Image 1 (tube, helix red, strand yellow):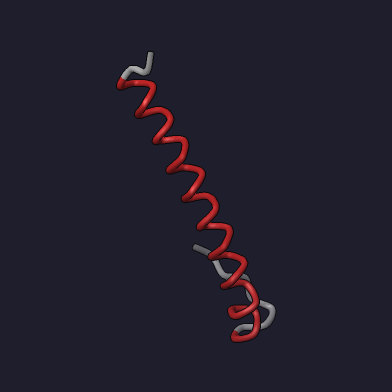
Image 2: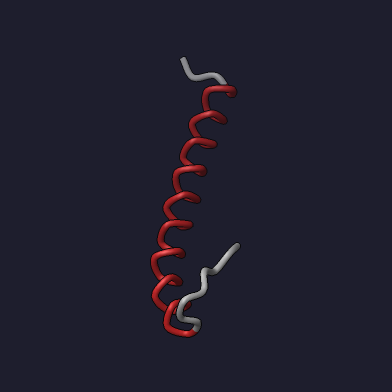
Length: 45
């Protein structure tokens, strides 16, 4: 029932979801710290 293409697609989707969640967590953790260190400046990258 499950072909290699389907497995890679599902794994890719899960990896994208995990990376997106980690990126959001990083931004939430870094936002207050960077704003405290450099008030009034946006952190790019």
